[in-house]
Image (tube, rainbow, N blue to C red; front, top):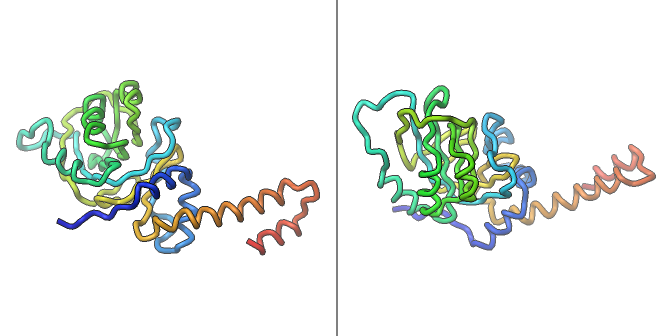
Length: 229
């Protein structure tokens, strides 16, 4: 079995100090991917925006709920639980809903408790969620496209595979960073360099803001500041 890429806990804790837009700006510095990729789009929203920053390694799966599966499936999948437990902690579930429109929620109070016990801190899905009060009380984060009433015929279609959620492609073990603005993947190869990039960006932004707030602000001074940074 290939060992998953991990980072020192100290780095993950440092990354938790940065909001998502700041991390997105830092990723752009390295020019390793198109600027319109690597993050979720506006079809998904943070359900508990007051919970702060979530950083963890992705456990991935695909679900469906609109049609009854051809063969009866168990309500739960121990193979999925084991796969989640094999993912480095902290763990973030990233689950693609394959239905054209979400109709059944895989997620609620029971599965929130199960996955919290498995070391997960939250979920990112293009599907729906429910039992909002109970899950919020668990301190378990939800990123989802909608809130749903029923689980319908929800079942796991595939586990531990690449998924696409809100335009964001995620592979098993990817490093997820998310807050009230949204979720994104931090490429492993540059993760350790993100704090330094953030510091440089913050210094440059501070110069620009200081210029804008100056009582003797002029466009020429703004141009001079931009030329400096």
